[in-house]
Image (cartoon, rainbow, N blue to C red; front, side):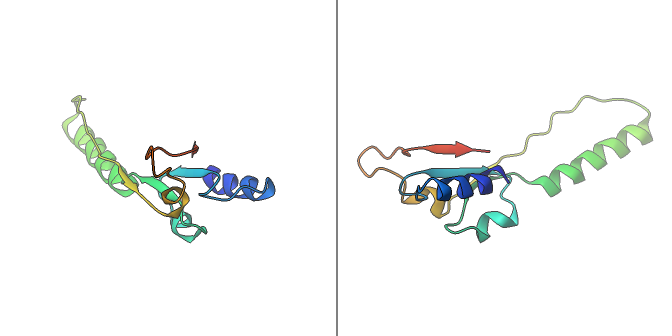
Length: 100
């Protein structure tokens, strides 16, 4: 939602995304693909977070013990139009990045 707000602020300031401002969001909500241009976003598997958390909780309830566990989820960068054209061809670095 913060990235969507950045779109509105950029428009009010006369900035073009991605030509003047690159924007990257977090969570890759359905809104990310509906914005124009589409929002580049970090996708995290929120549904899987809930499944694993529920399993860990049920295991703890059933065993009566707290067993420390480490669970690692790998995020994925979903590149859309809010950053692609904003990359300088010579340096391959984004001119400006806004993160949620």
